[in-house]
Length: 150
Image (cartoon, rainbow, N blue to C red; front, side, top):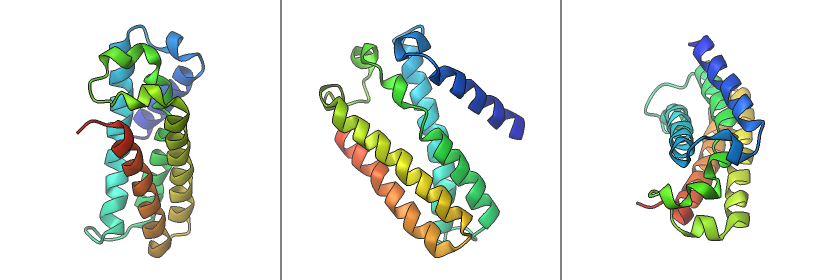
């Protein structure tokens, strides 16, 4: 598992090294990439949410491990929203392409709140985790409300 995560993170770092147009051979590849990143991030975020909402027992080590992945993954999808994907992006509202500065604010906010989530997890206090989870969840929701089709 650790090797797979390390390989994924290394691949992601290489992917982020160049301009968006050079990263993906086809718009469909960029879309698949960003959807995959969001899926993995949601899986780990959901594990934290289950602890924060009392659905599973709190496990500080698991919270930290999942928060580390969320914080890393929160940095990855943005180059895959390149403008050459606009006409292929059926899950994205047109506003995303018309408001790049606002979209970047949402992306930056998610990165910021994901960092706070990791810091809260590292305190090993469930109350800190709950507060940071709520803030991060609101960040996700605000971007989805603004730019994701139902």
